[in-house]
Length: 299
Image (cartoon, rainbow, N blue to C red):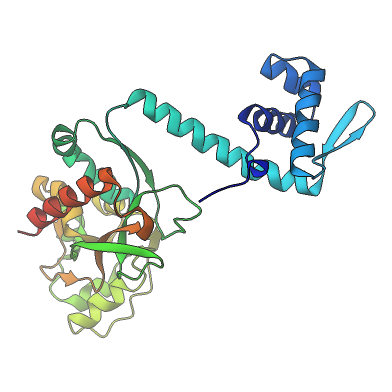
């Protein structure tokens, strides 16, 4: 792809513009950049001449952005941040690659994080950067190489790989179970139920699956499984939780099944990535590794 040099201003011009736009002052921009005020002014004028667009309105001792300047500043700020980030990662990891991954919060902290040492030992040149996301997003707008996704493999403009299914169990504290002594699914309709926003129909499906004609609308709502598990552990009610995410609590006895009646989720966990990034070497390495780790989880 050949790009006209007109549309590729020098970094020095763009940096002067970004600082001036952020500070709304050529003088303060000059102080931040360790330049003279006249040098900053010349750089802004040179950028405006190259683009053929007025970016600032000069009003005596003040300047303000034009509408076009405001839009351009937002784009340039993001572009400079990406260049800076790429350069920093190259400095700290010159012989490997970087994978920017969006993860589900509880899955990331309880399942993925404890296993990462094995991946890093096998791939010492790769740097992993994580950020939590609860919902799918637009890969074109967020700078991620991949994301761990719960749902169906229908994320637009992506490819995906199946990781694992999910089995949910109704869990509560031992004291809560001893107090209520559940003997049938309908009994759970009489107590406080703990819901998670990413599985809004989970309790309704659980009651239906186990033949209980109970309205499962009462209770409290959490946005993450980790906080829902904490609430259940402290006797707040019964939470319907992914079994593999609460293995430690079940083994320690902090949580116990209210009834031995699991529910298999209709959706599953997938690794998703933008189609154009499928050949990124760190993604290939991570994709193969997490597929094996997920397979081991299911056995």
